[in-house]
Image (cartoon, rainbow, N blue to C red; front, side, top):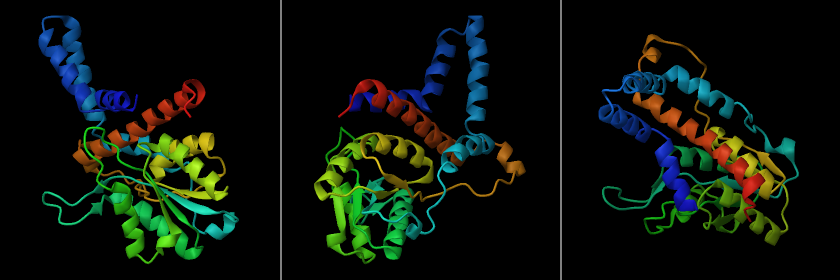
Length: 258
């Protein structure tokens, strides 16, 4: 099921839809609807490469949960849970293991909260790609916390989960084992609505502590009218979150996942 979900996600999200639509136009060019489809494809490509569209899609995600400036205000809680993003094992031209910008900012937020109120940190997330071997992705993230001065006895790794929903299931098991209940949930601001939905279903008593905010004050410039690769990347990431919310709603209410 997980592998099927990964395939469907790649089929639904750009750029594959543009390829399929243009292929249909090429095959059925003599038909009137094919020429209309070409116009629709052109408009969609322009729209989904627009900075304005990107802002409108991302704002509802990032604005839903405000940053937790002071954890003291939400005490008591037992732990800090931080969800992993992309990590890069050493290999090829990468000289040593590292993390992407989103993962770095999530870890930085967990570290900030830890310094203000030291609590055990659970780093949740394992190997995602089913076609490649695991390469210690969770450990790479934990090593950043160790280098920043968090004691090893205060960092726990959960590396069985492959997506956010599985993270909620696995973290719930770990919380029960430790006898912990309330916890701070740290992830990217845009990822927080989907994460809170999953964790509310499987590991209640999460306190949203979003980091990795990306939206600055909206200032429209002439350059925002033109398509850009940066805007396209952000739009695809936002669409991924909305699809994830729909998927998790189905899993919670109809799939009866454990």
